[in-house]
Length: 508
Image (cartoon, rainbow, N blue to C red; front, side):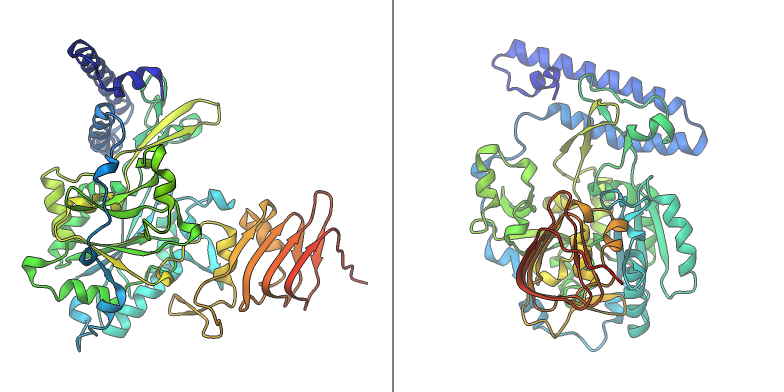
């Protein structure tokens, strides 16, 4: 952060210094507001109007960013949540389901966070359009799941996609193919905020366009923006008028995030005065999840604690699986009337995440973001539910993709379930090297996906290819050093093996 801002965020030793800091803040805010007005003036009609609305949220975030004094949490106030505030899923499941769940389903809306691009996996366009299983994309599987629910229970559960300016156009083109499916699909757009020059603390953008040189100057401000943009879109009001009461929100790349009828029944069966306004699904941490946000008790309320908020001296404590045993899956059940109330009262409270980035030209910028789960402390009767690990199946990398494409899972009505032939409840640990990072490269390296039912651990590094019907069991490590190449032959069975050096199988 620039020295200019660091000076603002230091606690003032005397009233003169505090006064000076306040003048600096006011000057920075005034300059920011002037620059935003200039940006709005470069747009026309609807575009300028939407930007003006977006910038109201941005000004609020920027104001709070300038006011911040040190870490957003006081470590001494962080406590383990009371036992009854995080319920085991089994307790909720064991209540059973009523004779008819249709009535509850008709009050539900499924919302998928669809703002991300597939760039980290070498793909262009929305991540939701990447094929993950039998030519089905993330979006295909989502639509199949909800259509199956609607047909099975004769219900009307709509799907809402929160797009970003990066994904909106491509997603809308693809939605036409679902016109004859039994799912109503709505979309709304996240806000679009200007990236801030780290030194001057002013927007980098010179006009409202998102093309050419300006493409890098805008960003969608994290999924915490869902509350404001959903409300601003008018869709929130419409769904409430249609009799909808809850949304089930999840990341579109989490293939474990399906509608759970037991959790829905738990929400709907409570007396209206004691209704949970917010449920966060959490699951037990493993060593792979040490950076995941966790639920804590803070000032008598449930609060999401993210690693970015943890003072440096306590990061190891935060990562410990003994003190903080659970993490947030980002599967959330939230009351629609409560969102409306909090938005209208302007009392949605979420910590700011300051995300530093470097643009292609080398310019250092800041993005101010918020996380959807951070709002948990604003809602009444919030609850955590400790769900099975199977409800957290994100596909962030091709290593994850290999798991979900393999025979570890079977696919039915858009939902992936662990194969009954798998003897262990956990998935193998898979680490594919940089030669596999891009989906295209990954696909060319597998003639078919190996049998992985009995696999515990797989590490692959370097120029490695797999023939058809390869079987992997136990711990398998395959390393081709620089300049070497390893071809695993068709039909090979590798069990507890380390393969390195050069191995070429030539057809003749």
